Structures are given as C-alpha cells and as structure tokens.
Image (cartoon, rainbow, N blue to C red; front, side):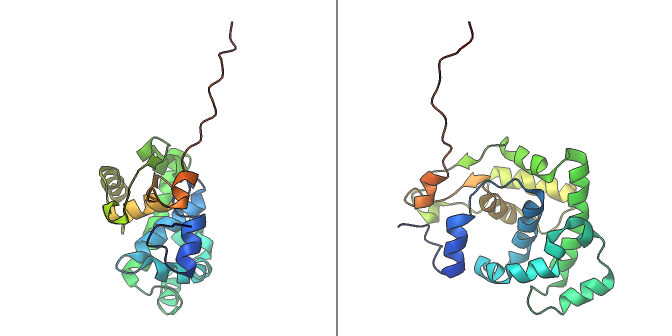
Length: 197
C-alpha cells in the first residue's frame, strides 16, 4: 500500500490514513485544527500529534467560549504544563483567536461557513506526482491568512493556513500514487434523464 512519503511512523500513518485531507465541517474540530496548526509553527506535526490529547485536556476540548474566558492564572497553569507546547505567545494567541472565532460564528452563523467560502465550499483536487511538488502556500491561503489577521487572529500566516487547508480537506494534496488520493476524489452520481415533462 503506497502512502504519501511523509507518513512514516505510527501516529503519522494513522493520521494520514484517517484524517488528513478529509473534508471537515464541525466547528469545534475546525477550531482545534486551527489552534494546533499555530502551535506547530517551528515544530513537527508528529510532535503535535503526540501532544494532541494533552492539548484537548488542557484547553477544555477546544471549546472556544471557555478558552476565550481564560484568566491570567489559567495561562500561568498552561505555561507550567509540560505535556503541551509551553510558548507564551502561542498560548495567548489561542485565547485571542478563540474570541475572534466566536465573532466569526456570530457573523457567518458558523465558522465552517466562513472558512469553506475560500474554496467555494468544494475541496480543491490537486494531482501532485511527487511530494516535492506539493506547495506550502497558495493564493487562497494568502487570502485566508490576510482575512483571518484582519479579524484579529494571530499565528495564521499563509503557510499555517495552507497546512490547515490540507488537514481539513479544503485541498486534496495526497500524491497521485497514494491510496488515499483516489478515495478522496468526489464521486458524482451518474447523470439521470430529466424527468420533467
């Protein structure tokens, strides 16, 4: 079974096979991925996957309303939690991002509706033959990054936004030889004759 070349060990293989590139529309899970992608900046995704359960415990399962109300004492507690990424800028960004996320929910009815508008609600199907051809940003991730920043988000540079797009299935960047590439292609029902008179 051929996989994308980055899926080399345990957690990465499981993540690649079951999550990466699968269209995601659950607001809370979208928020979790956005925060985790920001936490990953400068680190490996494998490190984040190893700490994901600890992050969920530490951040109230990524319930934005609770995170938006974290006290300075809670921030200090998080900075002393050896099971997560203890970076003050990233932790405080998660708090302010929770507030910005809640504002988007109010404006657009859901974060899902807001974020998927960047691809008109449909995953982009790329056809990369080699992992070295897969980009780390795009004009869409540039636009997403700019818009999120204008709405008060931080740790949402274009590269982070593109990784987020890959994670939540806004773009299918599995290489064409990977078994997941074809599994994530849209399967259209066969055309049926128009039944109207």
